[in-house]
Length: 258
Image 1 (cartoon, rainbow, N blue to C red):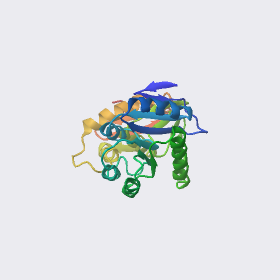
Image 2: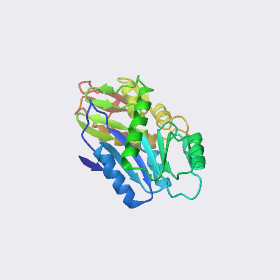
Image 3: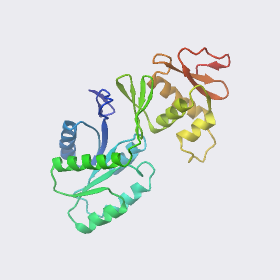
Image 4: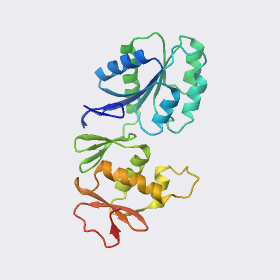
């Protein structure tokens, strides 16, 4: 295993998709115990200690599950759950809450958008079992989801994970969106404007910022080694955008590496 940004990363396995879980818990001892328990079941865990840290992480990284531990919270959690569900970073992510054993709070949290609510105290084994059951239910509801393969590159639907050969690569949300667009338009020029709209999902009120796009694409090229080493070469088309070609393609006279 390798470590990156505090997250365990095993080698890619095509037969068994890695499950990433973001866990928020303000109790440092319980965080460590949870991390150990989840690791034994093969989960990649990002352990966050505050709500703000969880939100910031989720806006950068796509995860399969979110677990929020708030068993000693002195205020209702439902308003925060509703706030999360109105955030595009959390809108579709399965959410499990471990909270106070108060039925009215459980009902309110579930009505606000939590998928599972467990009363504290509860064993880590039961928490993990419920996470697994929730994940199976979600995956059954999306039977058409398939990993997308482009030669040595394997993209996992709804995830920021990419396998390059047998090694995992982590992309930010913007890098992932740009990568999907570039591979989907293989051999075609993708303009700066198209990349900007894809990376910000059309919600940015700013005019397309070419320099910002170039910075993200430069990082993407480096992470995915789009220099021909793995069969694909990302070219910069001067004044227009980018073009993804096979390593054997001749470089057009108007295309130069950025």
